[in-house]
Length: 267
Ligand code: C2E
Ligand code: CA
Ligand code: CA
Ligand code: CA
Image (tube, rainbow, N blue to C red; front, side, top):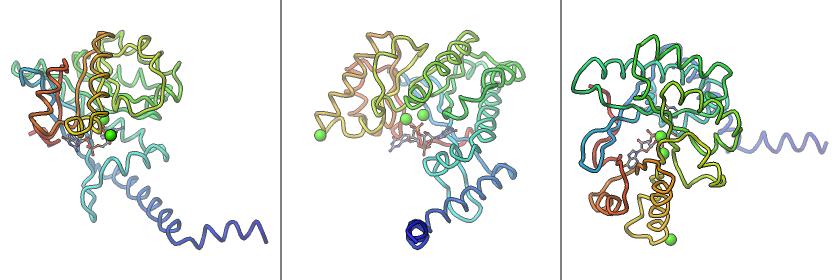
């Protein structure tokens, strides 16, 4: 009775039931979205201190047929858990390579780089590296313009596998940035051994940096650390010109946020 009781408590918890229901509905819809090619790739500008366009970050969008736009923050975790991130991630990389090919066919855009978010499960695929190489060859693109955004969770999950693959991809020219930097729990010591090119200051620190001393100190520290390690540093979530002014004084190299553009279709 006790064991049964445990299960039935869960079953009759209406919140829990609803969550499970929503989740399996979402999983079902995600499968359909992959089959029906419902996803879109949006692009958000990255600019340098002279406000020149340096490139874009690619961000996935899912215009759900019945609901509104579903945020990647809501469906990427489910895609990770269900393994659906593999076909979704393949699609994102395919689109990104196509876009880079387009950029590189035009004199005015050939210098632009494109960064793509990569999930842990995606990176762990045994054939992740050959898959990327195949796409780069297929689209005949300059791989130094392709940047992968990884997170601290990827380092904590399996540092050895991550470093091995990063080094392989760096050999063929790819760049790496460490996203959401400062929000994870990992040690700083790995930083010096990673083939990174850029640290990305998380938008939660940028948001309050003008009104919160602690956030300002964290931003300053991250930028100083990046300089010491000879890494580029980009601030995300920039919405105010005053943030840019302060970030520039601290030595921040690149800026991204609604101040410059919302993520939008390539056209
Ligand atoms: P992220 O990689 O940290 O992306 C930055 C998020 O901040 C994006 O949310 C972007 O739209 C938003 N953002 C940009 N500028 C501003 C600003 O000035 N203010 C504010 N408040 N927000 C800003 P988005 O597009 O909803 O993506 C959420 C997360 O979903 C991303 O966080 C990333 O972790 C994940 N994601 C998005 N696209 C992909 C993808 O193609 N593959 C994978 N694996 N994950 C993705
Ligand atoms: Ca990112
Ligand atoms: Ca981020
Ligand atoms: Ca505070």
